[in-house]
Image 1 (cartoon, rainbow, N blue to C red):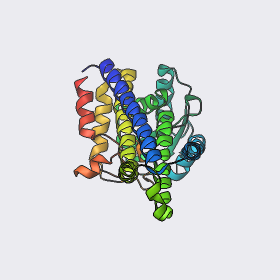
Image 2: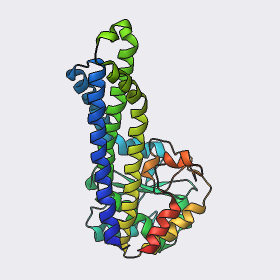
Image 3: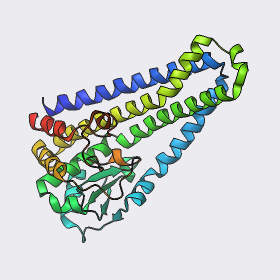
Image 4: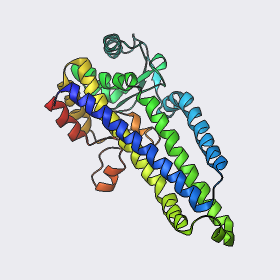
Length: 293
């Protein structure tokens, strides 16, 4: 596999998942509407609420993420090598210079945030900066800049809107079912009612799994795009190898921001269910693909 085919593959796989997600939501809306005689205006209202909530988080998520992670903005004088690497790679990728932040934490990790390249942020832990060589740090920073260039934060915000809409629709259906009492026998097709209950229970889980699948594909894409930027996949592969050996979880990590980091901030997950709900593909698989480029 070469870098260009890896980038192309991950792009179209992401869009296939997104198309399936839209089909899934359309089917969900149809089944719930048929099952319980939903007024379409109620369905539309639920989408508007989910959209407004996600829109707010989209515009303020970078500030919330940085505050939650305990990240501090740093200058070139404080971290000259880190600053120079970001500056050179941003120039090489045609991106505006992002703001540079550091988290004082021994766990080696990094992330990028910001809704567009103009207000982007690159953040690394002190553990990462001390553990990696210059060539390895370049690989990590190139990965994070690729997330910015590929507009992954924007894509995940759209996915969050879809996931939020599914959760609200399922909640409205279950509450309506609960409060309708005996009247539900006269409302909607009974077969659709049974299917609707199953959909309402399973749809938030399915939507979350789709969200995580998109997140994992974007990690593969950022790996390939970052390698194209540095022209040296081994730098990132070696960095991921070092990161994977760390058993120190990030102190400020939480489920809402875990998908942003280059590696799972909670440490390794070994069993199937944990891997299924993981925001990142297995690090061993990422290293294998990078070394095959």
